[in-house]
Length: 554
Image (cartoon, rainbow, N blue to C red; front, side, top):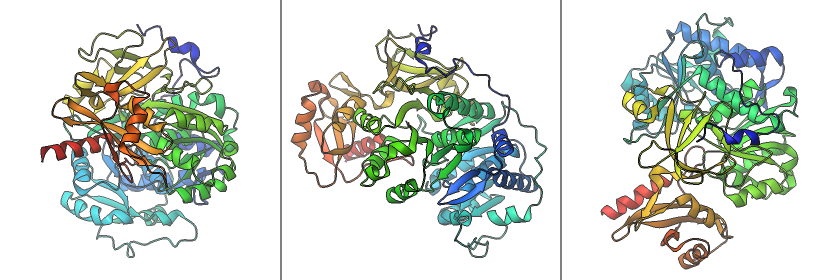
C-alpha cells in the first residue's frame, strides 16, 4: 500500500527524494569543517569559543592519548558529561580511535549507570566533577582502567582551569585538560573505520524493564545528519555556511541532540551555542546576545517556557531564529500557532534512539498542525494491524509504525532476543501507533503501551492531552490510564496550572466533556506543581501511571 510513497509529492521544493551518502566515518565531519572554516567558532559556551581548527587539534590529541591508554578498535568508551566542548572532544576522539561511544545521562543513579557500564563492558569513562560522588564508587566496583575527569568551567574564560589535585582525583585517574596539554601528536590515528563499524550505543527503555542499547553505526550517524540537513534546505539554504549556528541546549547524551545539534552542527560547519543545562533566565540572557540562530532543535516544554517568558517580545525571537524544530514529544497545536505567529518557521518530527532520532518529519513549507509529517528521504514506513503486526491497515486507520531506512540501527547491543523481536527483515517495529492521511502525512495516535482500554473502549491519551492544552488556565498536562475496579482502566489527567491560576476538578472535566466523547473524558484530575520529565523535557507518562498502580496495590 505504501510502496507508492504518496508523500514524495509534498516534499519541499529543494529537498531530494534520495541522497547520495558518502561512505565515511562520522568524525570526517570535523575535518571537513576545520578545512573549510578553520577560524570560525565551532563551539560557544557563555561567550568562550573554540575555532574548528582548535577543536580538531584537541580531538586529535585526545584521540592519540586514548590509543596510548590502550583503547582499541571496538572498545566501548563511556561519556557521562553535560553539553560542553569536552563532550564534543571526547566523542569524536573516541570515534577516531575506533572506539564505540556509550552515551550516559550523568545524573543517572548508581544502579542505572552500573547496568550500562557492565552491559557494554566499558573500561574508559569521561565524566566531570559534579557527579564524582556517584562515579568514584562505581569506577572502583567495576575496576575501570581509564577515568578521565573535567570541570565544565575549564573551558569557560574567566574561570581558572582545575587540576587533578584540586578535584582530588583517585590515583591513576586522568585530568582532561592535562591530557590535552601533555599530548603533542595531532596526527590522525591510523585506525581504519568504515560506515558499517559500530559508533554509538544509545540506551532506551526495554520491554523487560531493563534498558536496551541501540547500536548505531557510523553510517547511521552520517546518514541521519545528511537527512536532517537536506530536510532543512527550504530555510537553511539561505544562510551561508559562514553564518550558520545551532542551539545545543538539549543534552548531547540524548540521540536527538547528538544527531541534530552536534553532528548536524559539525556537518554544516555551524557554531554550536551550548548550554550545560536549561535554566530559562540564563538561556534568555544568552539569546539576547545572539543575532541569528540558523537552527534550534528543541522540545515542547522548552518552547512553551521560552515563548511565554516576559522578555520574549522584547527579544523579537522571530528576527533571531530561522528554523525551530520540535521533537521528543507531541507539540500542542495551540503552541505551534503561537510559534508561527512570531514569524518563526517551524517543523516537528518523530524518531527514536533506534532510528538515530530521524524517520518522519513535517515539510517546513507545508506543515500540517497535528501531523508529525512524512518519511524522510530513502525511508519507508508502513502501518500494520495492532493485533497481528503483519497486514497493512487501510488509509486513515490506526496501526503500528514499521520503519525501514538508512538511519535504522544495526540491532540492540548484547541483546539478540530484543533485536529479533523488534527488527524483522529490516523493518523496525516501533510500538508507536499512527494514522496516515491521503497525502501520506502521519499522525501519532499514541504509544502501544500507553493505550488506555476503559470499559472496552480504546482511549488514546494524546487526544485527551491536546484538549487539556486548549484550556486557558493549563500550562502543562498529561493523561494516563489508571486501574479501575469496574472499567479495568479509567482516564486520569495530571495538570499543572499557569502561575496565579486556580481551577477545580469539575471545571477541567466539564471543559473536556464539551470536546470529547464521554468515554474519553478524564474521570479524575490531579493538580500538581510540576510533572516528572526526562533529561530533554519529555513528560514521563509512565512514571505517573506506575505511581497510580503502586497506590492501587496498597
